[in-house]
Amino acid sequence: MTQPIVITAALTGVLATRDLCPAIPYTPKEIGEEAKRAADAGASIVHIHARNPEGGPDWRVETFAEILSEVRARTDVIVNFSTGAIGIPVEQRIAHIRDLKPEIGALNMGSMNYAIYSAKKKAFYHDHVFANPFKDIQFFLEAMNGAGVKPELECFDTGHIANTAPLIDMGILRPPYQFSLIMGVLGGIPGTARHLVNQVDTLPAGSQWQVIGIGLNQWALVASAITMGGNVRVGLEDNFYIEDGRMANSNGDLVEKAARMANDLGRPVASIAEARRVLSLSPSGERVGERGERRSD
Image (cartoon, rainbow, N blue to C red; front, side, top):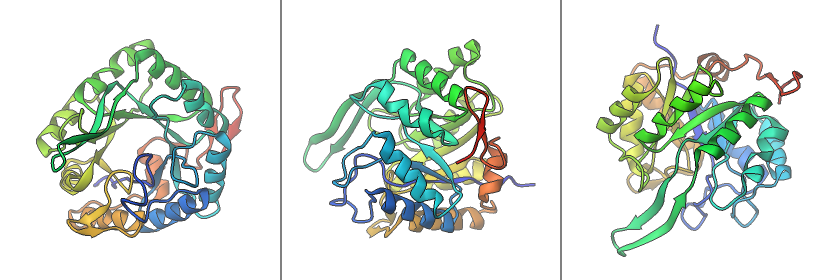
């Protein structure tokens, strides 16, 4: 039996602004509405960064709580909160995970140069070092374990996959593992099918994985992942375009295309309940906290 494909929608990101794409959501209500559009189109997971009303990043727990409330008022989609940031203290980056306990928390698995380059202008944009030393990775992972939150292992290159080995050996990263293979970021692995095959071959046995392609290369990688038995992430954080020259009006437009591609290639799209089964989450979204209490969103 063909395993259904789990589609994640990355709703807003942290760098893109409405100057680049008018559909980018900023406010909790807008993010909640985009979560509903994505879920209606076939997404079973939404990956969320918090933004302030002007579009900048927001790390206040209260903002994440409002986002979670707006999402839950509209859909029971699986919620995945980001922890990735540059220049933000680790305690601040994990506070919303500890307090709100989403089903999944994003965990960046290594450091890298992170940049955007314009060949036309011969200039770099967003030229940063994205630092994720082992001490920070271990800190986040232990906090997620304590909160009963499943880590989503975000890997921008092959070495990031290898960084899981000592954490597995220590017993703090526990199976089943959930990997996100992010491809096409300048400073990380190129976004090609050939590189994706290598990434998948490098994963620990029994891993679930999704591909995250940046820009229009996303669609070729989505097709590759569908045929390789993996899962996919689309959404306005990663790519604005349904096709060259045709910008999406919502995250739902991008999810709809991914779902159509999956169906055309013989992979059924997972429901939210099926996604929980595939990813070994509680069927009800219930989790166990660090004091043993059970809770759901």
